[in-house]
Structure formats: C-alpha cells, structure tokens
Image (cartoon, rainbow, N blue to C red; front, side, top):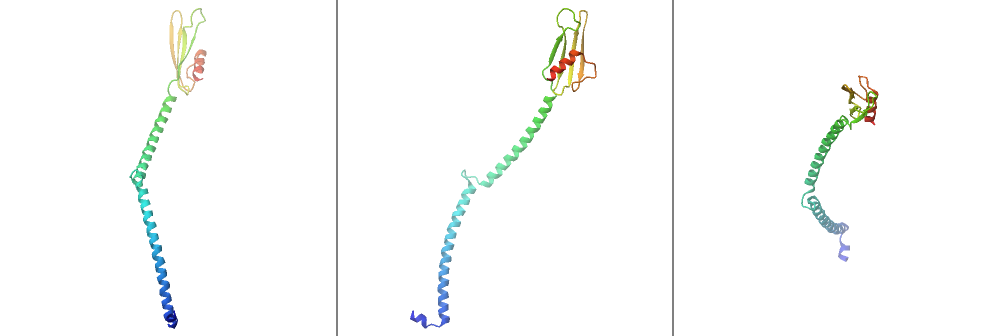
Amino acid sequence: MQNFLMLSLKDQALILSAGVSFIVAIISLILSSVAAVRTKKLRNRYRSLMKGESGIDIESLIHRYNDRVIALEQEIERMAGLIKNHDLRITQKVETAQVLRYNAFGEKGNDLSFSVAFLDEKGTGAVISSIFGRDESRVYAKPIVEKKSNYALTNEEQEVILKQIK
C-alpha cells in the first residue's frame, strides 16, 4: 500500500481506473451470461410454442383454421340463400285447402254443392265451386289475388276464402 502511495497521482488514477474497469467488465460478463441463458430459455419456449403440442407449428395451424373459417362463411352464405329461396317458395305454396259444403238451392236433400279455396299465405290462388242441382251441375273456378277476385264471389266463396286465411 505504501508503494501505491508513492506513485504519482496520475499513476494512481490509472491503476484505480483499471481496477474499476476490471470490476465493470466482470459484472458485464456476468450480466451477459445471465442474459444469454434467459435468451436461450425464451428461444426454446418460443420454438415449443410454435410447434404446439401435436408437433404442428402454430402458423400452419392458424392458416388452416383461417381457411376453414372462410369455407364456413361461404357455406353460411349459401345456406342463407337456400333458406331465403325456401321461404319465398313456401309463401307461394297453397296452404291447407278449405272446403265449404252447402245446399245451393235450399231444396231438401244433401249439401252436394261446395266451394274450395286453394290460397297461399298472401291470399293468392283460386276458388273452385260446384253447384249441384237435380238436372245439372256446374263447376266454376275463379282466380284470387290478395283475397280478391275480378269475378263476383258468392257468399259461400267469400266464406271459404276467410276460413282459408285464418
């Protein structure tokens, strides 16, 4: 220590700075080693994550799922179109036909005259009536659009149309 004190101030500062540099270098070496070990662990975890449990890398898995989602969206659009088409077709189909039997001429006997309504949900279709008499029978068909006809409707035809719509 005495030898150190005999050195010039410049030499002392040089030795002291060399010692501090050596200590900083040792600390830096330790910190870089710790950082290298942590980096290696993170790299291993990243590789494990990217491979997934089944050995398939996540990027491929994401691409595969994305393709499946796109295919499902297209299928949903196709099915929505089919449903819309079916809804349209169903509204245009004849609902359960309604029949009203009656005695057209008020004579004694059976109710052999009838009116039948064949209408869709919107009240469009036809009414068919058969008037039965002793000497002759007649059949009439009248088009119906939205519960109305361009032809005069009998009370029975109007009644069977109302029964159909309910």
